[in-house]
Amino acid sequence: MTAMHRLQHGITDVAILPRDLARSVAFYRDQVGFTVEHVMPGFVDFDGPGVRLALWERDHLRRTIGVDVDLTSPAGVMVAVRLDSTSEVDEWYERLRSQSVEFESAPADYPWNARGAYFRGPDDELWELFAWHAGGEPGHV
Image 1 (tube, rainbow, N blue to C red):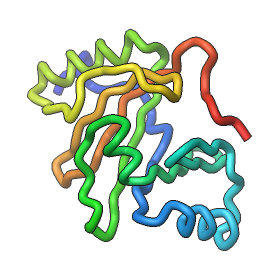
Image 2: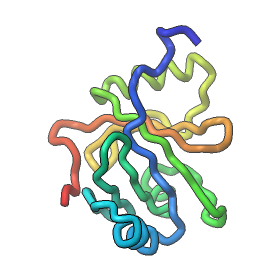
Image 3: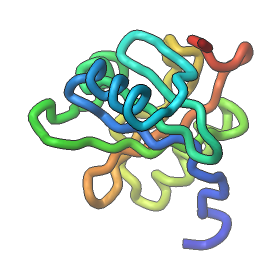
C-alpha cells in the first residue's frame, strides 16, 4: 500500500463490546480505577492518556449502526480512528474501498453527533472511522 493510501491518523479509541455493559463499567471503573468520561445509552467511555477505552453495548451497536454483532461470542473489539473532519470520513471510505476494503456500512451521520463508517479487519475485528460534527462530543460527564 502506498503512502497515499496509508491511513495517517493514530488509533484514538479501543472499544470492548461487552455482553453486560453495567458489569463491565463496574469492573473498569471500580476495580481497575478508570474515570468515566462520557455516558450515553448503550455506551460508556473512560478518560485516559493516549488511546481511549470505550464500552459499547453489542445490542445498541447493532440497533444504531446496523452492524451484525454476535451476541453469543465471548469477546468483541472495535478499534476507532478519529479523523479531523466529517468529509475526511468520506474520503477515507473511498480510498479504502479502492484498496478492496469491504465496509459494513457506508459513511453516515449518527445521533451522537458524529459521522462514521465501519469495516472489519482480517480477524473480524470491527474498525470505526469517525469525525465529530460541529458541537463536538455529546454526553460529557
